[in-house]
Length: 68
Image 1 (spheres, one colour):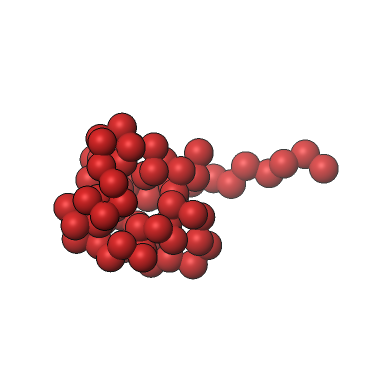
Image 2: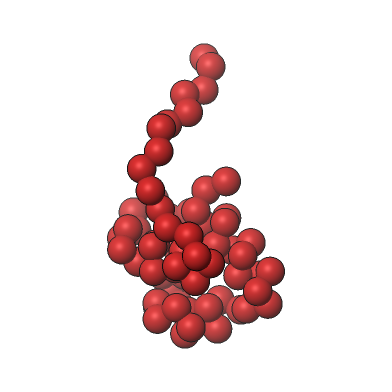
């Protein structure tokens, strides 16, 4: 699962709108929307700020290569 989908799922499980999540996490509403929509160029510090709301953080991981 990608980060945007994870955050959207957890936000909904917590019963928060995007606006409420943005306020509680200290992030801008546009950033939250872009993150949930899968924007490829987002600031990692802000991603981790969002993930911290769910006791999570982005860490380096091994890429999975699809069979061709």
